[in-house]
Image 1 (spheres, rainbow, N blue to C red):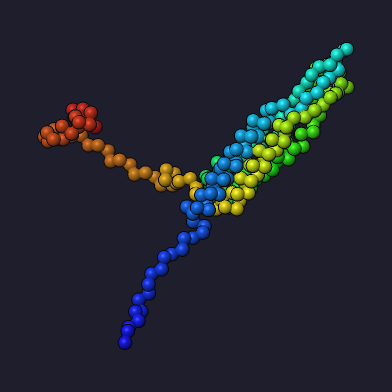
Image 2 (cartoon, rainbow, N blue to C red):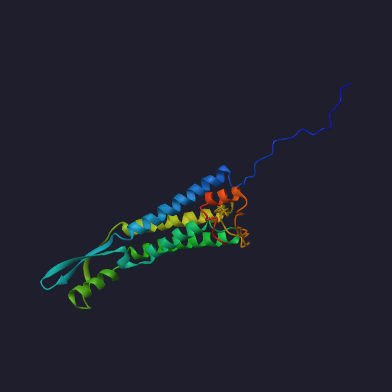
Length: 219
């Protein structure tokens, strides 16, 4: 007759899906960093390019004019900087603060994209340049055309938005900056004051000399 062992056989423990070092967490972390950094770079570069071109009538001829993204609106570039700061801050905070920063990252991307999209058909910047150039506030730009750069700026804002959404969805699994070097406010113990070497103990005199001290100086 066989015996049945009552000792339970240890089973391998399943790895938690939300572990900070899980493959899914690493992938979402890499994707968030890549999307956020790439989106901010695209916005900052594309917003400095020519968005609109046109011609203003001057005397008997025409004067070509152009306006870059910052002439049209400075909002996308400013929000891209905010997005970069939020992307870094995601790893500096924990708990509810991380959700707040992730939300700021998403909102900055959304704002950058919408403002760039709205500026893709703007004519006010060129009309203002035409009025300044000719000295006539009634002067407007003819043959107005727009480039692809505002749409690329909007695409960069979309990338920042996606990074923010990833941070909102998976950010609680991402690692935070190490607190290894953070001070906890506990006062550090003070070193005991050095006592003068005993002149009757040669070994104390030699130790003082090794430390670069003058054994004859009074403490």
